[in-house]
Length: 229
Image (cartoon, rainbow, N blue to C red; front, side, top):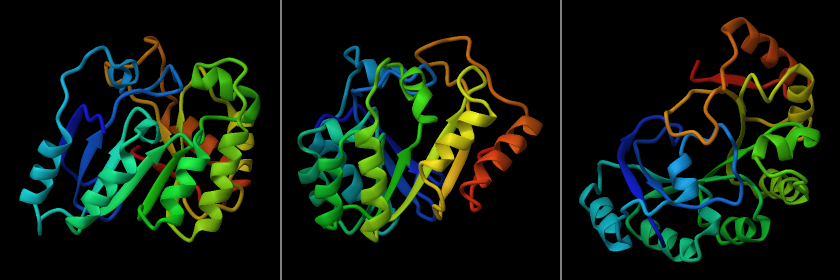
């Protein structure tokens, strides 16, 4: 598996766990607000070998609870299943971040009991999904299938939407929330410019506006929450 970096300790990426975060390159989307733009475009960023990462994780045995695998889009990685098996052999739980466009690969991990937690992005309402993902004419049927898989899997999971002033409004948030109506865990996250985004010039909503967007989401998902604001 191709690995471009490791965050050695995070208290945020894997809810309720002390975890390390493993970053994989490449993505099928080009979300203008993506905070890991370099990973998405993969312009030859120096990486780590799988063995180096596994040796580091083994050295933290008893101190780490789990590993978050993120990207980019991890489900693009052909060696992902085998890497997860090696991580689990170290006694670590596995969280996967995904955009939901590879339901067959997601199903394999879910049915194999290989992931303990999945965080899936809901980019926007169906009518604005292509715009928000940076791929016009995007077909979102794979996303709908991934939502269905997660909700029937018995695996702990969350859905999340990053809110960007130039891409979201009250109605689009209502329609995005409708895709996961009644979900137990749906988080609205405020856009933050990491300095490595794909389209400079984007902006965040105010705190008051975020509360209004949250109220719109709660019309479909009463348990929706704001995160990181």
